[in-house]
Each structure stands twice: as structure tokens, then as C-alpha cells.
Amino acid sequence: MMKRIFSVVLALILPVQSAVSQAPDEAQARKARSIAQLQSEGVPTIDHLPTIETESDSTRRDTKAVAQRAIALIIVAVKGETGDHAMGQTLIRQFDAARFFTPKERAFMDDPNPSEQDRVNFAWRYEGVHVLLWALGIAPELERPDHICDVPSIANTLRELGTHGLMRRAKLRPQKELLDAADLIYRYDWAAVNARLKGEEPPAGLDKGVVYERHYALNWLIGYLDQDWDDISTDT
Image (cartoon, rainbow, N blue to C red; front, top):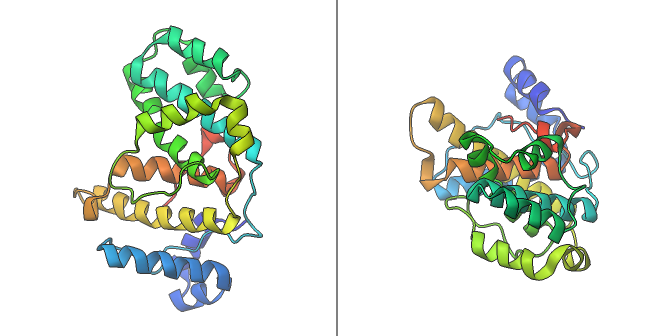
């Protein structure tokens, strides 16, 4: 798998044209499409930000694993938002989801009085649910990351489908679509982080929290650095 961190180092010590010329045509074309879209929106870009994985280098997630991840995320997000421990336990039973959680999620769900910061962090996982429902073909599109997702709609969808209904309806989108979305959010996130480092607001109305959560979920979807969910990095 292509290592973006290593690519960044190469970009710093080699001529830009040399580094770019080594990128596979597929990845370079994807990068060019993303940059063109961002420029059309007035979002800053940099040419030497590396390409991401190609289809052959990326991980193809199992549809069942993606569906289970979406269910785990909606449950931790609900508890994060409401602080209702009993409701969280009820949702685990309702979705038969006890085996779906990561170690950090399990610790959060087991804690009847989590910290306020933990609640905030997990409430943001609604955005990850939105990404995964899109990846599974349930949500029709990923809108521009300048507003939070429609939480009531997401909650209603999963409540109506349940675990088994979601498994039946889910059809993971082609890897090309997942990589296109991952490349685009990677470059959105660079722009948001660059603005933060300069003490500025995110450009072109971007919501930095939405951008980060989407980047996190999409990096997991494509198997970036083969990291587990709890350890996903969002390098820019």
C-alpha cells in the first residue's frame, strides 16, 4: 500500500515533477479531478500533496463489516448525544450489536458516566454513519462537507431497517467511488487544517468537524495504512 507520509517526504526532497511522474495514471487522474473540483469551489489546493492508494493497493472492505461498523457508530453517537446509558444498552440489544464495537467504543458504552469530552467526540460519529450508509448504497450521495448530516433521517433509516434489513439492502459501492471520495476529502482536510494552522476559518464555508469525520471514515473504508478503526490517522 502506498504510504502517504513517505510520499510527503519524497515530495520535499525530490523535484515535484519527478515525484508526480511516478504516480500511477489512475491515482494521478483522481488527484487531478479532486483538485479541479476544489478549485471550482474556491478551496485552496497544493500540487505536491501526494496521490492516494490505487484500486489494487487499497483494501476492499466486506459489506457485512461496513454495515456492522455503521450500526456501532450510530449507537455510540446516540449515547454521546443523549448521555443516556440505559438507552445505549437497549440499542445494543435491539440491533444485536454487542460484537460490533471497538475496544474504545466498548469502554464508552460500558461507562454509565462518560466524560463530557468523550460524549462530544462520540456524538460526532453520526458523520461516519452517513459516510458508511453512502458507501453501502443506502444514502444516495455525499454532499459537500459544509454542514452536518441529517441525523433524524439517518436514525429513522437504521431504525426501520434494523441489522438484518441493513445487511439485506447493503451493496458496497465500487472501489473507484470510495477512492474518489477519499481523495477528495483528503484534499478538503488539507485546506481545513492549513487554515487552522494560519489562525483562519475553514475556506469556502467548510465545516472542519464534518471534514475530519468523513476523512476518518473514508480512510478506514479504503484501508489506509491497514489501521484499525480506533487508530485511524487523517494525515494531510
